[in-house]
Image 1 (cartoon, one colour):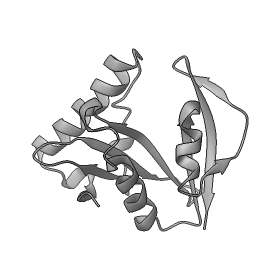
Image 2 (cartoon, one colour):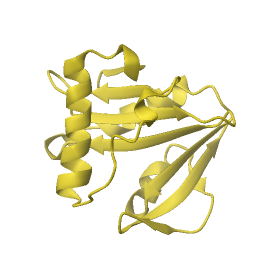
Image 3 (cartoon, one colour):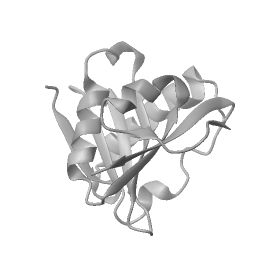
Image 4 (cartoon, one colour):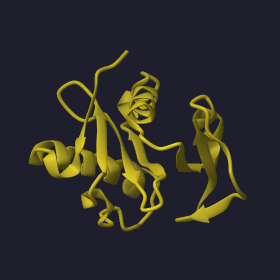
Length: 143
């Protein structure tokens, strides 16, 4: 199993934070051609935890948000092209689920990844929708 790391955003060193944000930019903005507001202010909310994996650099990342209603949300799940298929994303999902403190975790999955998220116990919770011109499926995982 790959090594994973986690920390509240406010506790990250500047190099790690830079690599997380760069990876998200590389995957979502450049590779998927989505001009969107990645630095949305949610990374700095109290309770937001960043997860990452890699050896010497950040090769995969996601964030766990704690919502005001007590639920949690996983988002910004990204793996560098050169690191895909090595289990990094799965290791991060398992780590985030293990760290979760709520009875319910939500995710807005890119629709083509719905089956991948299902392996972690996520099930469809609504109708598909477009976000940044990419079909997404709302999903939830209950304990």
